[in-house]
Image 1 (tube, helix red, strand yellow):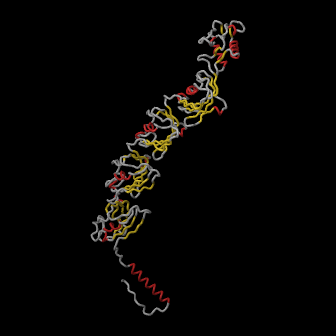
Image 2 (tube, helix red, strand yellow):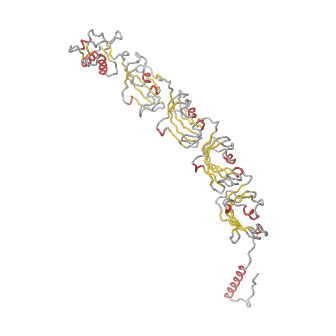
Length: 577
């Protein structure tokens, strides 16, 4: 020691003397410490200046690491830096590719950890130093930031952090998938993202279209699943990186969400069928179908709906009017049926898409409202027959009937019962749709029928605004309440008795050899009132008489002369003016 303690010449007798003695001793010790040589560094010294919250992975012997560093002497003078070269230092640990102290210091470090490492000469460059850069017996300080670590034995690591509740299918080799991803290095540096391009990455899996690690990491995924795929450079971009954003020998981390998958061998699939109890007919190619739908992608993303337009989608099926998958999916359906039709892109909108992503699988939730075929006729089902039937309805008869009208899905259109009165028409006079004309023929008073009328015999493609949709099949439940026999076809007035021999003279009340409209009308109405003649039922009698007068007034001068006047004698027992 530089200093030696000397005994005082006389014993310490007071407290004051004791304190003074202790102060004297402290000064001597401090003086010795300040002038002592530095304590030699026997081993590395590690000061952790930053420790990440999560340790993704810690270095072990045999691992390959990528790290940045600044190399300095104890006085702070820099002798080397990876930052100056804009390139990490990449090396195996524990294989004597580094100075012993650094080999030892890197073991146990975590990715993103930063440490100040002090290395004694015997674990650095020793007595020889390193050229003119590092003198002999130099203590070295390294400020180290670990960015990446992997091992030649590593394979693809998969961490699934979200699994959908329903997974009906998983990715297999040769499937075509659509997915979003964020690609980062192991230290979290983002190098690519499909989200920033606002477009999925679309590719085949397992056939070499992707880097090997991604080809492996995507297998077994479900639509909607989210997973983190970590791969060593041997399964990524290897020693050279991608030449841009990915360094050589870099581990890659992909945060992936799978949106869609299909195989080119796929056909359509039909699921979630709800078939009505009564299904008397199923659609075939050539039928015209009205249906509602919600359209979505396989991940549930909505893209279209007929409900939002408050109008069914109406089309022929099996004739190429819709995408091939829907053409197929609408065959064999019942009215009222609900089904989910899943369509691969080669049966949908293909690689290009149409307002939807290219190569997208489509999912349609379909509700069949009605369908018909252009060759359909009115379907007539007698639901109640009368015991006695004296006369059946025919063309020209005036009929009175009640009805309940609805669509095929049961939606009510109209009902005469709501008005408390019958609907009255003349059969064959085009006063109702052709299908109703047909359904009312050959009917007895008191009879009830169920009619199904296709749109080409109903209200056609246009329908009735706010009442009947275009191209809708109509359903009528009808009851014939009363009927009045009509006149023979082509007649609007007939005589019940023999015709007067001098009919013109009888009409010409004022004997001016001309029949005025009033004379003509009065005469015909008199015959009807007296039961001698009969007008066609169901029409305005005065309009019929006006029409009869016009037929007789051949020169159109507003009066009938005897020369103009003649009888129509198509039938022996019935004459009409």
